[in-house]
Amino acid sequence: MFPLFLTAQNDSIQKKLKFTADFRFRVEQDWNSQKPDGSQRDDRTRLRYRARIGATYDFKDWVSFGMRIRTGQANKQQDPQLTIGDQFSSVPIAFEKIYANFNYNWLSAWIGKNTFPFEKQNELFWSDNVFPEGVALSGKFSFENEFVQSLKVNTGHFIFATSGTSLGNDSYFEGIQLVSSHWQNRVKFFPAFYYFKNMPDIPDGGDTFNIDYSVVHLGTNVVLLKNPKVTAGFDYYQNMQDYHGNDSIPKFLQDQKTGYVANAGIGTLNKKGDWKVQLTYTYLERFAAVDYLAQNDWARWDYSSQGSPDGRLTNFKGLEIMAGYALAENMDLKVRFFTVEQLLAYGTTKENGNRIRLDFNIGF
Image 1: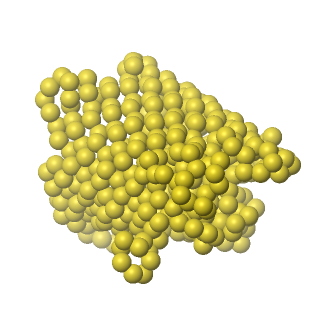
Image 2: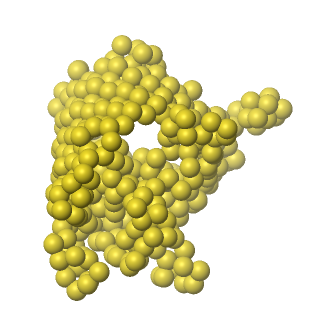
């Protein structure tokens, strides 16, 4: 319908209306995955896909509107991929983004449902597939000196679940972040503070109590070489909340509030023939992040036994090895290998698992 709608508009509207689309096909293999009771999950092979289409409309120089829809179950916020063989008769569709965006000089803002507005270099704290709802504000200032090229402040208020009463009773999170670029943009620092209020311990209605998080994040990324591009990054997370008075949290988890992620990579995937290799090591304790808002790529751990399809990817350490090759501009192949081990066991034994994925990605 979108191409038909576009051709029906006059030239002025066509210039203001832009469309994007992308498609992913995935082959995925899981093995050696142990459950909390010590039994083994069955090895699993899946063929999966995801399709998305979006549009933006530049209403004025300073205001625009955008939206994007995707395949995938609406209640699987971390995972829009569909498994071939699960939906033969019809394909579920959900809104991924819908927002109004504002830009004026150094100030930008959006309202609605949009991309996570804070600087990040991986999905270990916040998944790329989770799009918050609320209000975001950013201010960026440029400088003409060798030490500091730019300084940016990001902040916002986002509602996870409304209470139907006052805003203070909602499940929500707020954040503030400072992003600075140095030495010809080769070094970037992005410290932040995130406050999560009244967050359910289990998503999608299976919760038994609410919990708060006060997470300090210290992040940095360094471009060591420009050709070939060699980068290194580090993230440190510390939840400052005191859970010792919370009887709903087991004592052995009350101090599990620290996390860090280290990565190193070489190469890019910008044009045909480009290649990239990246290593990522993760150590993430139980309450260093909200587990059902972080990625669910690394393992098969979820809340399905509590009635939710969302993942629970904290309380683990592990390694990711990624290798990619650009077949053309906006078209690439990526192989990702994950191996994980639980830090503290929820049952009689620690969970673990191995996973490998081959992704074909194409954007339009």
